[in-house]
Image (cartoon, rainbow, N blue to C red; front, side, top):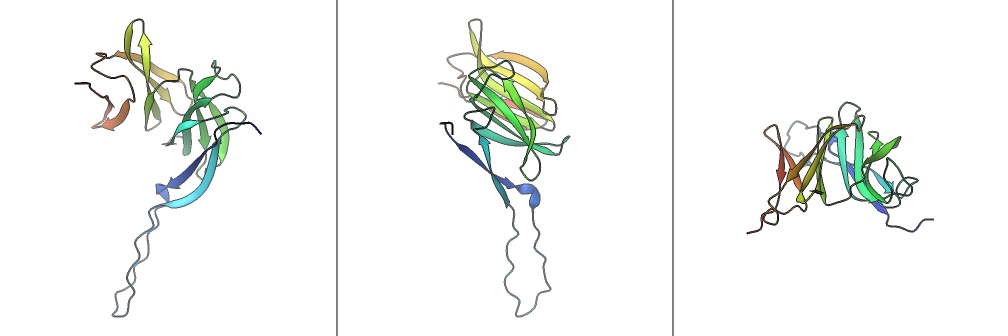
Length: 184
């Protein structure tokens, strides 16, 4: 057995919202139970496997076009993959019962502090990056069905006033919103 950090991911599915039936009110009726919002599906061990020795910073996202879940994570590769050796950011696809589909791969060889957001079938990945002497963020847009790169942009920051660590990524009013810490 390989030595390494074992990460397990407990999946709770909001999609299985269970509505409790309501009965007609009578003088002897018991109090209604609250509806069950989450249903435990299973514990999934994402790493280690034949592709990744370790994994961390896992995120679970839903891809509408495939009706599948994708788990993204950073970690140590068990062997070179996708042009990367050592560490990389990877993905693994799961069905609705959280069983692996066999579709998996590497989407970024650049391991740095990062943030991400799935919007529909598009996955946005933002990581710390240097370009020449500039410090900033690399923003990459992926098709989450094929994992093809759709766009790759460098955004320089006013460093050290604007910090390049821990980019927060949100989707607000139809726009991708990248947030950062500002040093005063």
